[in-house]
Amino acid sequence: MSKEISDRVLAIAESATLAVDAKAKALKAAGRPVIGFGAGEPDFPTPAHIVSAAQNAANEVVNHRYSPTPGLAPLREAIAKAATRDDSYEITADQVVVTNGGKQAIFNTMATLINPGDEVLLQAPYWVTYPEAVQIFGGKPVVIDSDETTNYKISVDQLEKAFTNKTKLLIFSSPSNPTGTVYTPEEVKSIGQWAVSKNIWVMTDEIYLHLIYAGSKFSSMPGLVPELRDKCVIVNGVAKTYAMTGWRVGWTIGPKEFTKASINLQSHMTSNVNNIAQQATIAALNGSQDVLKPMLEAFSKRRETIVKMLNEIKGVICPQPGGAFYVYPSVKGLIGKTVNGKTINSSLDLANIALEEVDVALVPGEAFGTPGYVRMSYALSDKDLVEGVTRLQKLLA
Image 1: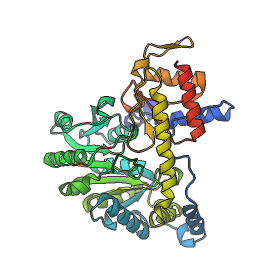
Image 2: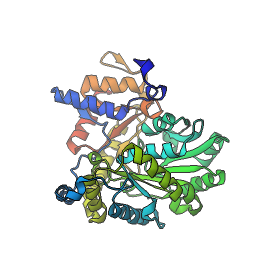
Image 3: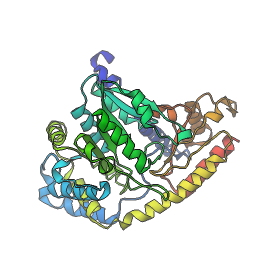
Image 4: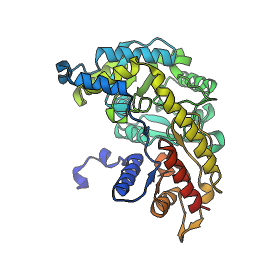
């Protein structure tokens, strides 16, 4: 079988986060009382006015037809308007390409920019899709490590050491998945200025920009560093902000030369994004943003709870994230511990033992390039969150 499949596709690892979520859901369907901390999606319904817009759009015959590859004109305008507000510089609709979720936005970016042998700087812990998207187009991920001692941030000095004459692109994300880390404006600006000095591209993933908690602030790299804008691609979407993970609408914002090439690519790959979902996204972006407040308030409270409870476990160190809805505790202090006759030799072992012994699903740090950690999403009910971490506390006591 393997001889029939391309080497590039065979080299792709399955999405660990989706695999854990699927396993947890399968066990739950089989009657196990599984509590899953693996899914990267809000546990809230999509706001009602967005759903209503989709229902109305489904009855409009124009939405039953093909539409322009880069997106419906009103949606591109709405994205440009929202991005201008959020990124603090003028963005126009002709810089926008609407994609089938944030993942396609990332794949479009890599396909458009990366040539075989190009090096891409990538911070670890990283979101699981980043290195796979780089490698499928022949690029080489160059991983820069970070840990809890720096609150999962990398420095310009580290970037400088990793840079070579083959470096083409830096992938940057703040707030970050899997850590929830938020860089300060000064840190974002210094990294952007460094990228300009090296004449490399930056892809900045802003999917969590509205999920920011007190004490932190979102900073747009191209907003702070104007001279970067001709070599910067912003990736974003509605999945996390509006609880629309299943609607599959994302986008890229980039210089016009990049955008034209990306449209040509997408015209042969997927054509237009589902028109009903595009109309729903127009309602999300143009409607009242007050609908976001209850979700953010709930996440903020859950963040406080999960950080406190995890830090009560001996051997666990859990920094408080500034954004997104994940914690990324170090479990290195648990390595070597035996629970219920089973020894924890790695964070992967811990994830397996937690699922087998107490029906708690975690994503091991191996999936994010940093063994010795686990990612836990707190996008689940308050009751399940407390019950799940309590099970871990008892297991690891």
